[in-house]
Length: 410
Image (cartoon, rainbow, N blue to C red; front, top):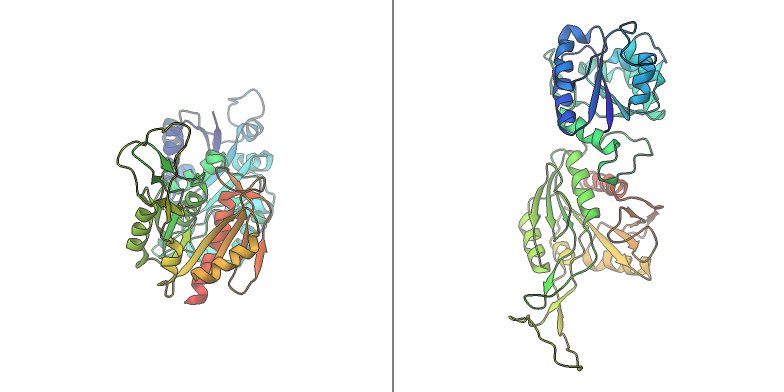
């Protein structure tokens, strides 16, 4: 069972931390809570003890619950350590290496990943000293999940509200390795730089029926498109995911439209296209379909075999490219040879703003795997080549460029 040690500091957002504990326990994660003295003034330790079903630690010199010094025991036990809410005070202490209570001594002693969810007045959050402390900790590998904007407890409006418990929990699950994400490299939680934007994402293969029993398809798993959709939603976008048949869970907070054929995918894309700001077409729709689909199962005819007559399917990305207007349009080029040449031709023919090219015959790239090796190519011929990385990381890089292109067009 995975173990999370949750540090709770003194802020009105403590009540959200109770919901976070409840969510994690429901996911069969063991939670140990450390509360500062000030936190206990907002929410009773009994609340967290009841929800976590574990004793709550509030005193460095309290009774020993483990066979070794308690802050060391909790530091070793943690797979992930989370501080939520994190006040300016606790962030400053950790940045300066101060360890003067149970929470800060445990943070100093742990080798687990530490996720910090700030919560404070907007003026405090924007204070240059606080921002310097946050950046210092980011540079040392601490993870942050950005606070939200809105009405604060003090009555001010601005950035400072602690992220919602569900969002924090989802990020904790990713750190713990849910979905096979590579978390070896420190990174911050997703920025909200796509808030208010609408993205259309496609994923997976399509299926073209030969007869009621057989069909034509390809090896696409949908992992790349689903990663883009999930990452875009985490960055605040309103996402429509048009998905061919895949064996993947639907991303949280994403509208998913399930389709089967290439024509189905085109119809769904055209329906969503008018309202979107950007399209990331990561799907691998079939290029061909049966010229005449059989109404009945095709039977064997001895040793002569059969001939299937195929015709070209409509080109989804080219169709959208003809009417893209001010939208950002990102396509993919999955090739086995002449990668750059074919990718550049697609950019021109399909009116793309960027193409993500990969050689699917290359080890570590291609279909039905968690990793990819990609090159971003722009219409001006400029290229960015990347080494092998997780598709979740590729998704964030794609969205970084999408944000840049949206901002440039606006």
